[in-house]
Length: 307
Image 1 (spheres, one colour):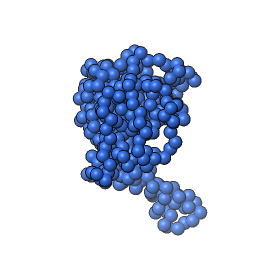
Image 2 (cartoon, rainbow, N blue to C red):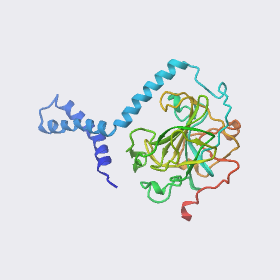
Image 3 (tube, rainbow, N blue to C red):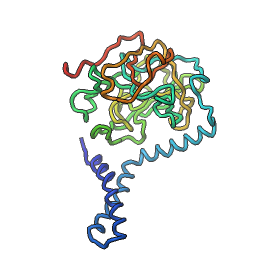
């Protein structure tokens, strides 16, 4: 793996602060060392060049938020006022863990970003609360990597990005996005009037459907990957009222026959509080639980000691 780009990127992220401090110090001292160190401030342009896709998407996201707020004001869809005629299946086989997302503000994926207000992040945990075995910098070490991703309901594919490179994992929470946008490889499916699902961070070249294709509930459409802004392999899944990832309003998702179970040692990966299981309405899910389609077998990765 060629690591010079991510290393230069992370060097620039921290070197710019040395340069900025040196520029300030040159105001008070003529010391040559501060003059030379001030050139480190130019590394901000290196960071911006490598981070262009993220900056571009951040701009699109801000514009999208403004457009949604102008259109809906404070009347964005919620589970009390939005009633879908479609009930969705979880877009995977077996049991996965919800690590982000809910139908309420308190436990939401990103409540302040209307498109992702009701989004979910899924991955797979073993009985020790770990999402991987072996080298955490190797995407193939993660249980969910390359696992099958399914269509959550019948629909028509309206957008596909399939060939973005996998994100490079550097250390816990640090990554280098090689994709041209934050979602990496993704599929958008139209399920009904003003109901579209987005399945993101998919594995490069794993997408099996094309724009215009009709898909059936439970049909294999791709494999889980680690593309875009992703700290580790996982599936990002959301429902929205338009095809755009940036200026559509997010919709609360009601699932059919979903089974919830409390994960073993979940606090190892996420110490945040989560909702009590008896407060979760039928058909809804929230972070901190293993979820599966009730008709599927509930299987978990083996404990790391047994691998």
